[in-house]
Length: 251
Ligand code: 3Y8
Ligand code: NAP
Image (cartoon, rainbow, N blue to C red; front, side):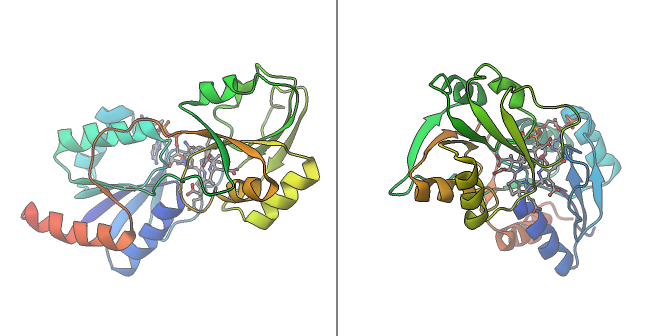
């Protein structure tokens, strides 16, 4: 039976792999949660919306006769990754994660590692500053306990209600970002502190490189725990895995 892939997307790596798979003549579908108004067009057919938990995903895998799942979601999409492990075990479908390594501090970096979004908010208990809060929209509410700061908020879509911060500016922009554009943004706003997830990859790194150049501290949120699964680091390795794991199952 020919391979039919489900790519759990939402990252640069997912888009790159979808192009690789399309060029290799593979069929499949790229899946988005529906977090932003217009998800990026993919080189394969795409779907938008949750599956209804691990159970819903297992049912989807069976109904769509998916032969391989590639979890290329963001390292902070921990629930999706948990569900993918559970559903692929239940539906007996091979699963691999396409991941990118966490960023490592370079000489000149001043990082304060925190284990969670809540811990990052707690670390803002300090005198008023201008803070670049570039962690998206979903977790903004966690930071409302420190209204002394002036926040520069970067969001993919314009918010339908003003974010709950007395002093804030919304920058509506979608990555990937460049160091020069982030330097210009951070200098023009007088940013003196950056809050970031340790997302890895290139698309979100610009603010980290800009902080280093400006000698600014970064509150760096470490990644959430994700269950054990096979992890690969590039599209070619995933293509090889698809070829190999297919034969293993005798499909
Ligand atoms: C909907 C789908 C591609 C993928 C591009 C990557 C890079 C640019 C940088 C900052 C950091 C942030 C955020 C970010 C980046 C890439 C990648 C990445 C960070 C899109 C996309 C979807 C999302 C969802 C969105 C979250 C938000 C997070 C903004 C597409 C553009 C902050 C993560 O408004 C919301 O609800 C936004 C939600 C999850 C985190 C959050 O908690 O708010 N991503 N981002 C996916 C879906 O519906 O399934 O249109 O491309 C994808 C990308 N965003 O193909 O080029 O690979 O990581 N995304 C973070 O890293 O901290 C911005 O501003 O400096
Ligand atoms: P999450 O908290 O791990 O997942 C919450 C629920 O959203 C999941 O249980 C699932 O709903 C649905 N979901 C998540 N990703 C999905 C996908 N690719 N396709 C279909 N349903 C999905 O997820 P998240 O952190 O909100 O991330 C959502 C999306 O944004 C993912 O595609 C991720 O790659 C992308 N993204 C996230 C971040 C981030 O910082 N979190 C950054 C960049 C991109 P059901 O349980 O109903 O199936």
